[in-house]
Amino acid sequence: MPGRRGSNLKDRELYEELREDGASKEKAARISNAAASQGRKKIGSRGANAKDYDDRTVPELRKRAKELGLHGYSDKKKSELISMIRNH
Image (cartoon, rainbow, N blue to C red; front, side, top):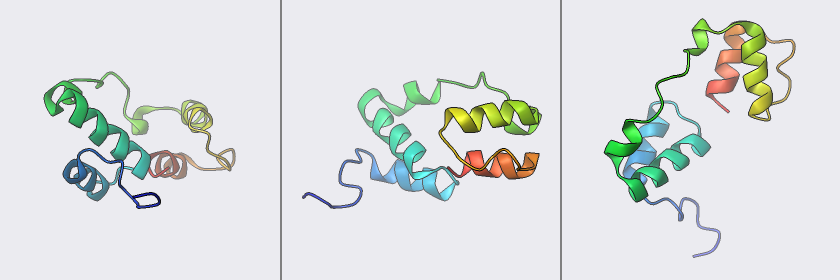
């Protein structure tokens, strides 16, 4: 049905779990759809090479915010940048 929210989600349950854990809508949809098409085990084994946001410098966080297409990050403190990136 056109215009129906969430109609393109392949794993609604996983999407909801990710949203409850604080993932953005975009990230939760991306992960849940990939898990549905490739299997949760395969998706779960990816990644884990990136540094935690708390361990990054402010210039690194600003670079990441720019990569994500966020705006208004240039005057933010480190904690604000981390929150902005996690909640985009």
